[in-house]
Length: 188
Image: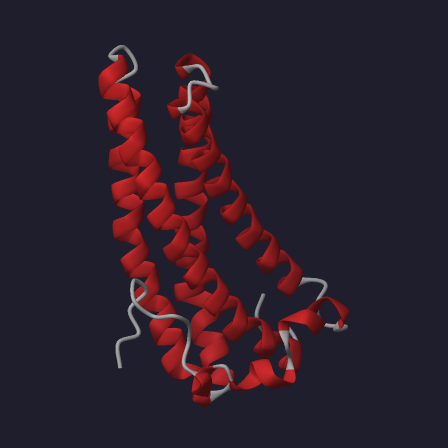
């Protein structure tokens, strides 16, 4: 079965086994929610918000509701922080959290392999985002080239948003139940 980020509708049910006992709608009420789980979900919300901001700004630029001189520094600041923080977040997960969490429940090991593969796939999408953003930013003095570049950037942001949301949702549904069940001892 193909579990690639670009094609899967979600994790297989066999990897979502703990989600039945720890459904998403009960996470915030769980005594183990505050701490690592709420921090993790907050980071994910930050990534989603940054993508939404960049997508909205690109739409505003294309609709001429946002001046290019205002748009450019916002994209540079938000986009640079987004890429840097996402790479750092994924590195910590791959090197620290995934091995520890995988060892807690052997049934989920394949899920952590899928999430690790997602990180590699997302690297390609982030590289494309950086190329598209830089191309649009370098075209600020040519309105036609800027519109073309901003349109390409917007299309890429839509794709990146879809793939990143799939990854973050799957990651949350695999990791959060393990931490809620076992606690965060030994993870920090």
